[in-house]
Amino acid sequence: MSWSIRWKLGATPVSATAPAEGISRREHLLPTTRLEAFSDGVFAIAITLLVIELHVPAGNEVLVKGLEHEWPRYLGYFVSFAFIGGVWIAHSTMTRFLKAADPELMRLNLLLLLFVSFLPFTTAIAATHLFASNLSFHEVTVSSLTERVSAVLFGLNLTLAALMLYLMLRHAGRSSDVAADDLAEEELQAFAAQRRSAVLLQAGATVVGAFLPLLSVVFYLALAIFYVIDPVRLIRSRK
Image 1 (cartoon, rainbow, N blue to C red):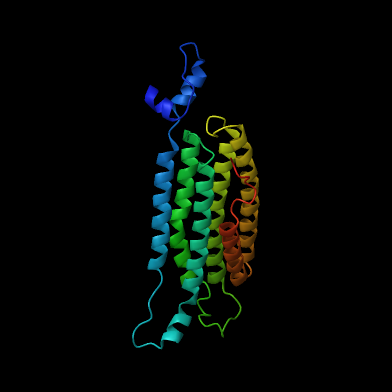
Image 2: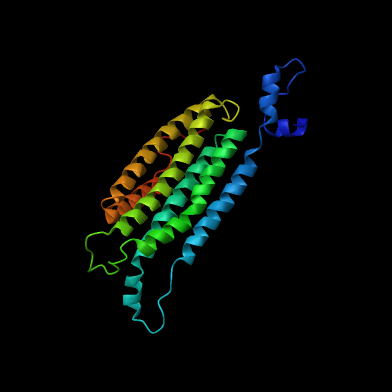
């Protein structure tokens, strides 16, 4: 890595007598700007793709009945939009405490984006097959196998994305080459502990989906909204 890049990363100039291991680690560090820019683009595209699954009722339909018929799609949209929004806020908060990105963090970030970009697909599955025989609010009956499978697939996607975010935070909090300073490491570790709870709650809601799909989706929405409203409650303000 060139001297200019090391200087941008805020690294201390490496002397000729510095240990080879330290030099090697620093040579693999990258500025966080690339990670942030690419991630923001994927988050924005994923949210945009969610809207495509919302269908406008045909002109010869009664508007109210047409909108009511599409309610599973609206519910899926709000769940995924809130979830991606919460992940974006948490991701943006995390990068405040980073001075650089190492290869491990970049790989974990790619896995996070993999599952986030997959959300429009699993959202569409849930919207199409969840409550397939219960499209009206007045006709909710016992769930079918298809509905339970679609709820679990949707929840599994959300859980894996939440898990990748937690692993990113945990890795950043344990790496002095990535965290900005000692205080940043403490903040990231506290944030990781919070997100670990989110992963467990999300996984629990997914298990509920195998038995009560409607209730599980309500849990998905509640968790997503909570982490949009209060994503950094364990993060102390840095002066």
